[in-house]
Structure formats: C-alpha cells, structure tokens
Length: 325
Image (tube, rainbow, N blue to C red; front, side, top):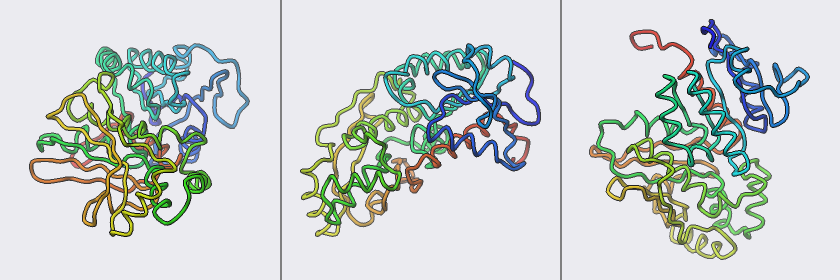
C-alpha cells in the first residue's frame, strides 16, 4: 500500500443511493474533508471517478495497489446475494492494512470474528456507523462512548421506517398508505419487509451488542415474536395514541443474557426517550451504572448513511494530532 498523502485515497464499492451520496460528498468536499475518491467499483465495472466513463472491473487487490488506497468504503446492498463478495473484499483489504468503512450489514453478521482477525493481522480498523443507525452515532457510543461506564443493557428503536409507519398508523392511516408515505419520503426501501418484520432492528442491535460486550455478531440469536408491523397493528397503534402513548418497535439486549436480541412492539409512555421520537428518527438507550445514556435523532435517509460513512472514513484515515485534536 502506498504512503498516505495529504488527501487519503478512498476506494468505494457500491454506487446505489448511499454510495452516490458518499461519492458526491467526497467529490465536492472542502478542505476540511481531506479525502480523495480514487475509484468507484460496481458489480461489473470500475470508474476512476463517478463522472468518468467506467472501464472493466479489475481485481480489488489491483485497484487498492494502483490507487494507494487507505480506506475501502462498502455501500453495496445488505443482501445474501452479495454477502460473500463483500466479505471477501473486506478481508482482502484488512489483511493488506487498508481500513474498512461499511454501511453493508450482511457480511458483518456472517463474518464478524473473521473480519476482526483480519483487521488485527493487517493492523487496520473497521467502522460500521452506516450499518447501525446512519447519522446516529450509535456505534461510536457502543464502541467507546460508554466504555468503562458499566453498560448492562441496550434498548433501541434503530429503524426509522418502523417508527414512521407506526406513527402514521396511530394518526389513522391504513397500513398500505403508511408504507407508501414512507416510500414517498425516501424513508422506506422498495422492499421494507426487513424494517417492518423487526429483522432490521435485530440486525442493528446485534452489531451494537457485539461492539458493547465483545459478542460474536454471527452467534447472536434473535427473537422477533410479536415484532411485525402489518395490517393488524393499526388498531393497537391508535389505542396507544388514545392513552397518550406511542407504539414502538423496540430491540433489546442485555449483558446478563449473552448472545440474545429481542424485538417487540412496545407501548411507550411520555418521558421514555423512545416515546419522544418523531417520524423516521432513531434512538438507542444504553443502560449504565450511572444511569441511562441516550442518543437520538438521525432520521433515516441515504444521505444520513453516507455522512456516517464520511465520519467513519475521517476517523480511520486522518491523523488525530495532539491535545484536544
């Protein structure tokens, strides 16, 4: 790998909505974002930069060597179809000493321990903010923010689509209309089944718990009993609203129950940080010895995930300096 210049070279894998927003931010960044987008790789082609014509897709090792990449940024879909390739790319980069920043979840769940070993072997870092809550700094809190504070529990609404749809149901929308509205606002994906079944909340909670307590995310079991949001949920959402409460899709984990994440539809009351969420906002409550510590906000959007990736890229690629730097 080539030595880092004043601008750290980044190779981006994936050019969907999140990848495009990430690329645009790097290409149009001011001097306070010393990152250079060196190449963009898609499933079949590679671009030296998004505004240039694509060429044949070379092996990733060749791209990393040619560009002197400091970071591999992954924004490919979190689907089983690309999981093995995403894992192989991340493992190769890490073993070569190239840091990995990922908004892709699938290979984190299946190859967590192997990725950690590869990073140690290559002396590289992995950052996953874009996979655990977009702009919400949930991963930073789990990794370092509550270290030493005796965090024993995790309670989260990490899926903005679920919160948005539940609030629309409470306001009187039928289920199909609520989902359509989420899509119209760019909150829900074309297939929102993972968000509405509780699976996405469980995935993010698995990753956060792994950062918190050193669990192997691949070994974490999930219990989604009663987590699904569907046509039958509207009545419960409206009934909760009549009592001044709000229905939420809540993921929980505890250090006292290792390797288990649960997701449930839970009626939350005023004063609960999860009750206070609006629209596509997210929140994570870390139950610590000194009291609960909550991060909230960070509405779901491709831009939010892309900005989280930029933050992570700066974290791993730019020297920290001294003092308060």
